[in-house]
Length: 159
Image (cartoon, rainbow, N blue to C red; front, side, top):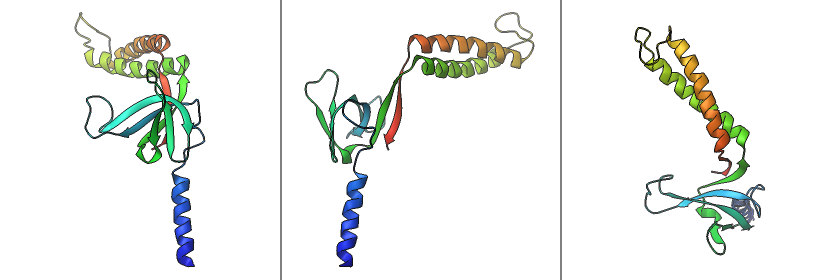
């Protein structure tokens, strides 16, 4: 009797672990990593990246509509290495993230290029002043880039 109970618990727990999160439903845009035999030049190591819209979800299978393909592609739950759900494209978030990233990079670059005694190139009194000017320019340029070319944001639901 104990063996039967342990077996039932094992089967039920593995079935419950194989289900998809509630965020993954028909119409949701997702990004899925599945295994691939050989390493490709771009993307994660030995993993193929698929982006598409969920067509249907069962306990064992995710059916995706990939742009440019006819019909849906079935991906077994056991083959999925990672699954992300799209949070959409946000101009404001893209602008902020790009502004911060480019500001940090340009602050470091300006500080490293600063030469107070030279008349060519950045010649601020201190490296901190050069970093501040670089951060200001970088934030402006990065913000404009993020505003003009926003990108899709993703949230991981299966690892």
